[in-house]
Length: 381
Image 1 (cartoon, rainbow, N blue to C red):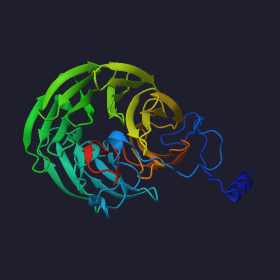
Image 2: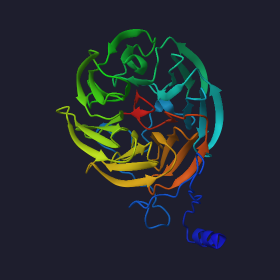
Image 3: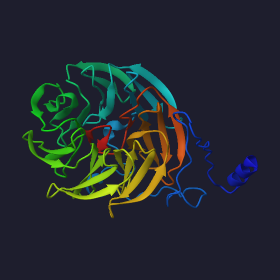
Image 4: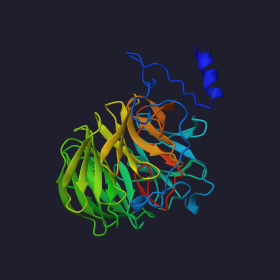
């Protein structure tokens, strides 16, 4: 009957996606059936992708809006395997791992440089940045003596790199070309993690995972402006397209806090799922994807309504997210399942699960549309 059904489906032009049953006690990387969210109902082939040009903060990140700098760069998905101490590179067209190389101890994120010419592997325990040439995908050198780089950002004007030294509760502002230290700023919190900038780039918010605090920092003068208490375990941060609010994923409160950009206060909480952790913005910048790392799911929030419009049960332990350049695929690392998953953004269906090394974390799909990178695992303006 399965063969007959496949033949009929193909004759009618439908896309067939075979997903193994999710059984009790299934091993890491097993594929669950997709949820019956509003987007996943109805069956049949997905409509052809049609994404309106994004507006506001993300106006320059729409389909085809690539910088001339990345012309000729080979599209690859770079996966830092923290536990394995290596980077794996996946061809997004074949879903095959095409290269592996060792880094130092505990690589966390793959970060595109502000000018899109370089990729940096933030190697935390070894206090190094490993440099990759995105033209070839090859490691070309290592920058030593960068204290505990858990994460890496760049000011929107490109004048400063910001190394998030989580272990020391410190932000190190550095010259992005020479990597000489400009200024170190202690933050009044525990475990600084992820950040995003205001619309004009003058300030940014950074989460502190271990004490429920978000810190506001002056990017020009490199000083702390204040703190915002959100509780729980705040992780990823993303600004709305109109710049009016910041979204904060909270692994401790199982949802997303919404902070007003005007008043620096929490104005709403959106429940999503257990262990809300990472974010990615849809290609048309109308929706926000949320990984619920401890809840085996991805939630979709509408920027217009600030409500969850879909939840997809995906299994694994979804962590950091990246949207494909054409907007049709959502890629994410499974932190505790030695795998990377690819979803259809129209339906939430799993298209592929790719086995990788231990503790895959801040994967980066590069190149992407955008004029420049503000860091993390690929955030563009």
